[in-house]
Image (cartoon, rainbow, N blue to C red; front, side, top):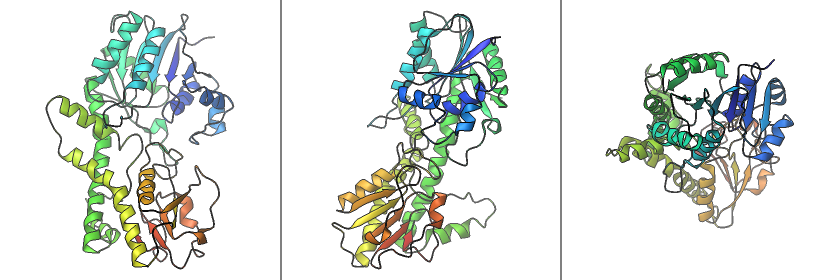
Length: 407
């Protein structure tokens, strides 16, 4: 017997796939991704991103997968859009994926359907950008023929990610009936909702969450820059500071990925469009964007102090993903670090257990830089490294006795 409705997830990345699996355990669910190879791999129960295992995919017995969205005239649909929202080369919002997803949904949209946006975006985007596309393509009218919600995703990729049922869902909608339906929908997979009064409140709340984290990390990064000038250890400073009960503990390092290093630019973009030019948010971004150059320069300085030639020396980069215990390399600032090192004349090689091959012979490298704090790195044997070499541990995860320096 068919369900009263079908759930359609648009975009099967780290957000959409997990959502599709949870809904697909109990309800008729269709997962759509325009990457044909991605869809074919998932049909073989393989997640190329390494976030979801075969058993989890198989548990979604009511989930179907496709790379083309087609109308379903026999069932009401909830469309949930979870496509990427990156920035372009000028750090402005790139809404091309959101545009395409909205057009695709508009072509299949029917009376009685609901469209939910989970993709992070700036305040007013759902109302002024997404909804007009849906109405234009579908020839339907919002709140008469279909409802819309904006309910930002809060998934944390990596091994330490929380189950969806443990994440409070912020929800907003175009009308009260749709809002209550969305609350019931997410509750069906165990998610408690926090209702807000408008799309703009929900959109802004998501940007506030990630921009706050970006700023917190930029603060400790700036502390690290000052400590470097003072020739004192940042970790010792932060360890002392966190003995106070209300000190917020963050670790300095590279800030990349498709959320924390992107979302502040969405907030800056929207703020400037309404005549306000943020000072703190932009300054935090500037500090974090500077870190790859600072780390490269610090490593080169350490090599010079040990009389190690720079040009032609080999550097081993441990970790290339944008965060620890995760296989995602999108917008990883490790690549920026590598480019900075190459500009000094260093030759680089990457080892990452989540993306690259086996651990190389470390005796051939003049510099070893632990760029990402994967758990696997804590047990690596560095005893056979070159006598004339440096070991730089960006986030301080290795044994202190081994390292030459860290942030």
